[in-house]
Length: 469
Image (cartoon, rainbow, N blue to C red; front, side, top):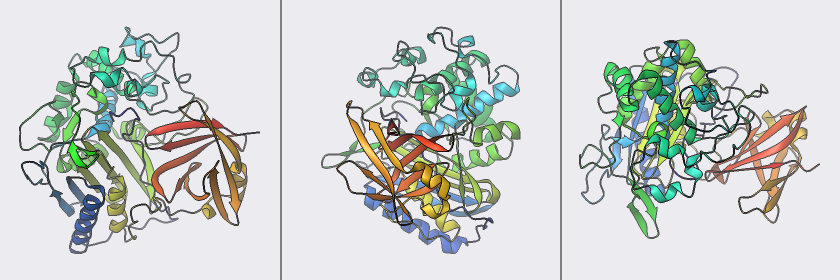
């Protein structure tokens, strides 16, 4: 969540969509050794010190445990009850808090932000609470600010955090585009405090953590010697090193919560079961929302909707210095898959995806293989032809990069100028992946049946460019 590239929580678990849903029937005895093998492989390949994991289907715990080291110097092993910083998975707790206030009539989704945070200049624009929840506000993300990166050791107020971008122009007019935005969720924390009259951490504790029995979930301490907490690590030039310190006042309501895999799985069940917010509110949180134009975006309110094996999934990832997390929930089978790691060098998203695949009897994918097995044959010929063409990406350096999309027989190919061509694989909603980087995404903006713009997500960066006429 807190890197300048905004790497937290965008990626959906892309999988196989079938006409009829296939239920998960694997037994605990068959699943657990495969889960252990997948976790060990992730640790070996990523060099992450540890991973805690929970895979729970209904009342059946398929896998629940941890491997590796929660503290490398002390050689302390983790358990399933080890506490990790969860990064942007925090956003769904913030979203749920807002929806609870909406249900109580204290906040409306169409309320203007200035009603609750009048001190933030909006440069003549109206920003609604809904637009903060679904990342369509256009407000610049403070995690992209060079000045913010110089202050990580300082304890800062929410006002000080949003002041990093208060004078910035908007990235786009509110409601006209989607861009993942940590400032928006810090502002939502400020809205919660204003509307409830309580500090964000106390409100969540009173409304969610204590009533639901989430005894190991809390606003993270910036420093602790408690052995129940995992220490965070990063990838160094010659191995794994302790992560750079970030005062936890900075992520605030966008990414400052801590939890265990067991507590989080309990939260998933409570959220889906109507024990947190109403079913109508949860539907808004977990369903793809739309722009002002009516075009769908692949985000709800703090959650990412998806499909796997004919089942709806609800997921999110998180990243914060020293930690990376990923989770998905399959409501049809009450299936929770949660992985928390104390390493920010590689997301466990693919590990979660592989645990999901094994739970449904689908072969896991190897590191570097395509995250989504769907091929271009699932794309209609008309849509395929509407995408073929050349687009010019505007790089952060100010340079332009032409990238061509063309057909090679039945395969849809992408080729950036001066680079090899690669097949792209359809994931739905005009979004494509590639085999060499499971996290890379190409998304096309359509207008009147023709692609007019390309958006590239890679390594946390978002790069856009128009179609060349």
